[in-house]
Image (cartoon, rainbow, N blue to C red; front, top):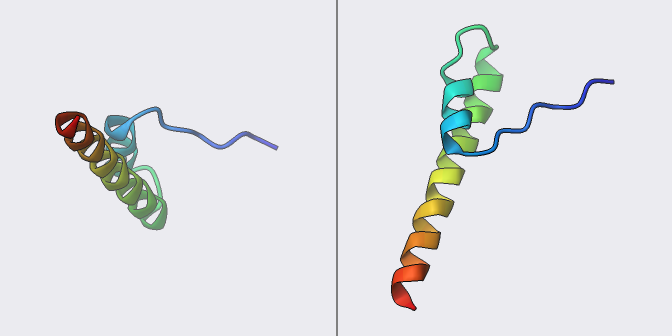
Length: 51
């Protein structure tokens, strides 16, 4: 069994979401992961400013 692809950051997720070779439903999942990663980085930046 192949191991699943794991993206390291939001840019990788976005790149996979924009890959026309992937099925649409898989691209949608990657787009959601990219959004979640971006929101997480914003959350971290705001938390650092509050300290």
